[in-house]
Amino acid sequence: MSQKGAPHGAPFSFWRNNIKTRTRAGVICIRDAQMLVIELEDPVTKARYLSLPGGGIEDGETPAIAAAREALEETGYSVTLNEASQRIHEYVFVWAGESYACTTHWFMATTGPDEPAQVDDAPFNLGPSWIPVQEVAGALTYHEGTRDLALDMIRQHV
Image (cartoon, rainbow, N blue to C red):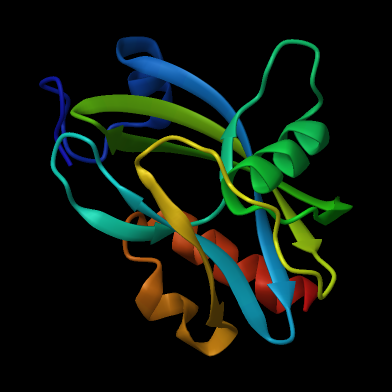
């Protein structure tokens, strides 16, 4: 990936200092050997893909509170976090034609058998679904670093 004239493989510090930054929190939610995902549609490219629930940390929020809030907002599920599982991942992500240097706090999470609440999120969120854990590697194709982190966290905590 070579964006903004940077060499391929530029360190994250280069991206963080030269493009927009986002500090985020998200969940890897497992229930009955399935993982909770959301389908997103990029508003510019119209590309659709499965993603993990997550988003920006608001002022005054801890990463854990933000992760649980984002999961509820994006999927309708109230999740229980394993706060000890927290991993921080730095990566570059392209969304709606913009590149972002993201720092995301990821947490393993679970949810009960209840049906989700109604989701009233952005129009690019096409809704939640559950995929078998064994299909995660082939389903999370939008960002290989995030996919690999999710797989590693699943191996460690499930």
